[in-house]
Image (cartoon, rainbow, N blue to C red):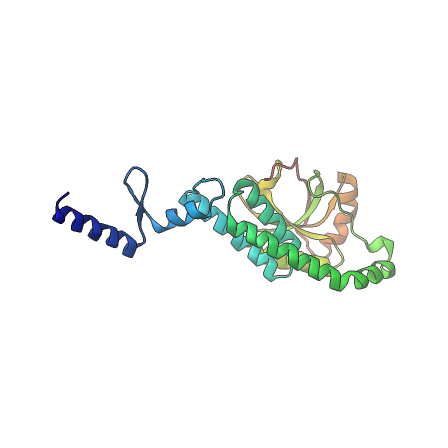
Length: 218
């Protein structure tokens, strides 16, 4: 190989290092994002830009819930994301973080929660069902903003109802477009939901009863 050829190859290698690029096995230039993805993937899978964008959305949504103190809901979102993107180190790190935070919070408040439950009248305890079981909800608000939905759910809880945030695309009978919706209680049948509806409408006049349909989430 000529001296000129060797110098040219060295110069090209230096340029790729400076610009954050390497090459693939086929000789095609590889961006810095692709290099990071290759190094960060447990089994060699590479996430596309759209996948990375989706992961970022999950992290942002979960972060908004965590910022409001709802670490359990944040953890649920992260677990959903990991089912779709099991090799995401960012999602796995946040899963560990939120689990640690939940454990710490439980240890601090455990005795307080027990005394509060003993003091609360049974009639004021809101109805609820398994998180993946179909239910009838008394729907209060729908929004595209996680923080707004979570704040409204907290307000509903402060008013004595079981305020919860759901993602519409996780349920077969809710909106096929992604919305964050708040319900004042999750009820096993329509009759029990309608029985509570007037109490909810006294504070949220537009509240209504609707069936969730079956769970189809991650």
